[in-house]
Length: 255
Ligand code: NI
Image 1 (cartoon, rainbow, N blue to C red):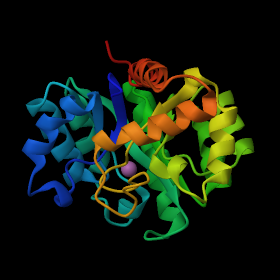
Image 2 (image 1 turned 180 degrees about the vertical axis):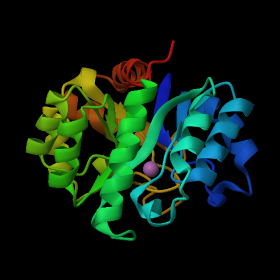
Image 3 (image 1 turned 45 degrees about the horizontal axis):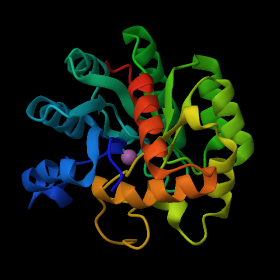
Image 4 (image 1 turned 180 degrees about the horizontal axis):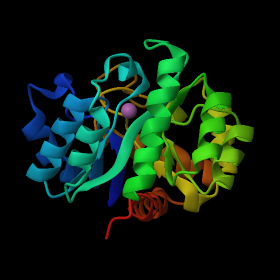
């Protein structure tokens, strides 16, 4: 079994884990998972992320407002995020970004909330966790303008976009999508991205890798994602776990 795994992007605050959260989290060490970052998607889930990081020594937290939730942020949301970010185990602002696939929030509003949080991260000296779906051009424009450090998670863009992300000094996160049959474009990106700039993540409860596709995902399933990346890169799965663990610690500035 692969050991020393760092799940760089998880949502254990999600209500899909309400029935067995404690038991599941405590079992992860037996599945080779050493560390994880729980990612906020709005103020409530950010607060729950912080709570998880307080309760479990192997969990870090990110706080931020996802583009889906940009539509109803309270006026003082930046102050609230800043307050939460003072917690010792908050390692990033995220997830933040643009989602033009679902368009749950008007695009203009998504852009405003995204840029405000990029500026907050700069002010606090924290890395960011970026969500971008069908919005590569606008995402890259804002990243080039604000030049944050951090991670573009669940990367779904082209190799060209990935090269631009790397040029900005950022890391790229890969999910169980790499195991999907129709993942040709993502596999090309895995091939291109240097080992020292990639992270592995579940984005759980979503994005379960094959053969669990469609089921509730958890960090134990990263074994499958790592095996696939190892196959593409031509190194051992354990090396992939060790390298991506180191990268995640660097990206989140841990230790
Ligand atoms: Ni996510």
